[in-house]
Image (tube, rainbow, N blue to C red):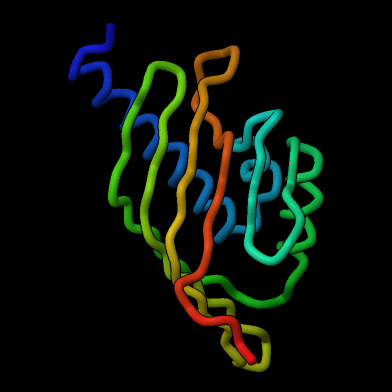
Length: 138
């Protein structure tokens, strides 16, 4: 049975993983980014097919990192719960991409991330789902 202290420690470890993940996006560090994702992880992004597995995730992230713009984003955790070897986080995000000409593409919405411990007792992103609060442009 998990104690309050052990759950607090696991939440800290998850927060550290999330920060590593976000820093990797900002720094375009593909290997660190992919390392935060579970080998059988699944990402369900809006308006595109599901991404399944680490190698598919690598290809997806590599394509995004080749975009010449800059990323600015923030995430706000609304809920983080640990359930043995699984955990989930629910929150909101804002995201802005600025291309080299200065044109901005902005999004904001909500997310649900699930984490799972791997065979080495490390937390990894296992399921990622997010969607925009903004209407679809016409």
